[in-house]
Length: 250
Image 1: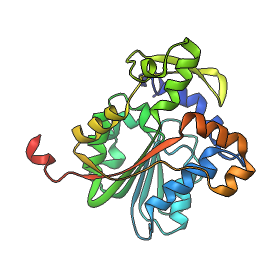
Image 2: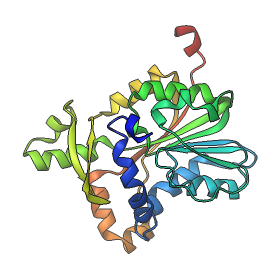
Image 3: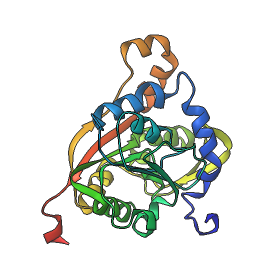
């Protein structure tokens, strides 16, 4: 499968193990900011089916299964999976090819998660349309992305340019990842309007948007993380539902 991967997904084969190591740290932003906020928005999952797209090792999906989620599937390109608990299936697959995965054919899910994985989609609108087709009518997609200012700040400092120039730049950029500086990622810049237009083009509307921050206790315990958040702003979390008018407009 590695030979057929889009360039944006290839580094994840190497990064996946470093992600799990980083996420396990006491002061990881995923642990103290992102996952608590994501979990809060998910609400009660008892009896609900969940599809975790870009699930990493499957640990979060296993946690949801332990809290009552049923008939759930995790998809990740790396296949560095834990042993799944009953009711959870972990599938090696590319999120850019959701509409081609036989394990998902004919299925629907009450909750679909893109937890910092959406940026690896080769064609974001295609991936979201495929997810929409897999979504139960009364379900929702929970999607998180790094705030686009986060990367614009870094590019501005590296290139000696203004924040505005980098925020609106459309040129791909390459950077060393903090989990392993020997691994380089190439990403396309995006703006808030880019994200909103992708959601709309895929037939989705935004029910809720959250920009989670550190709790007062976390700020006291991890001032270096608050300093990072003050500079880079953190993440955006979107709760997306199907647009009922979408079918008539396609």
